[in-house]
Length: 173
Image 1 (tube, helix red, strand yellow):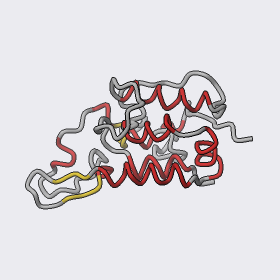
Image 2 (cartoon, one colour; image 1 turned 135 degrees about the horizontal axis):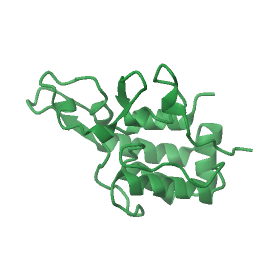
Image 3 (cartoon, rainbow, N blue to C red; image 1 turned 180 degrees about the horizontal axis):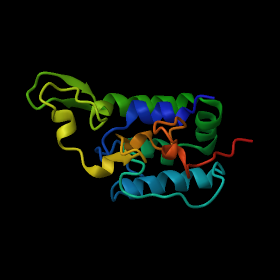
Image 4 (cartoon, helix red, strand yellow; image 1 turned 135 degrees about the vertical axis):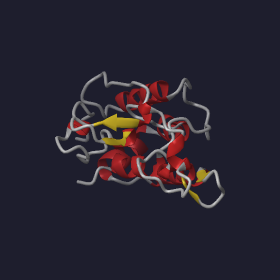
């Protein structure tokens, strides 16, 4: 099954702290956003256990996307995660995706925000990778770097699969 969060993460996330397009998240960076996200999933009965590691950079949920989850009804979240579709969630995700663009420092190109800090230089001047911190990447056992938002996306990006270890198991029954 293609995991809906993978699509959502890859389509909407690349910058760990984007301006809010809602107001329900607690603020405080990636760690607080991650806690808000998992807290809502726990409230909706979708998590198999209580605690997941929320450290800065481990899951760079942006404020807008977190607000989509925190503000949504549990039925919409369950439909999105378990069934792969929710019109309400899809509309919110699309709004977050469309709200943010990155312009290269030299002005040569504009691209979706998810192309920033993705380990690939998309700007001729490299500015889409220039301001990335170590917390925006996950280091595989073989020292390969992948974007941190590839962690727990239901796709093994590291050759030993360590980017999918310790990830949530959603309760969809």
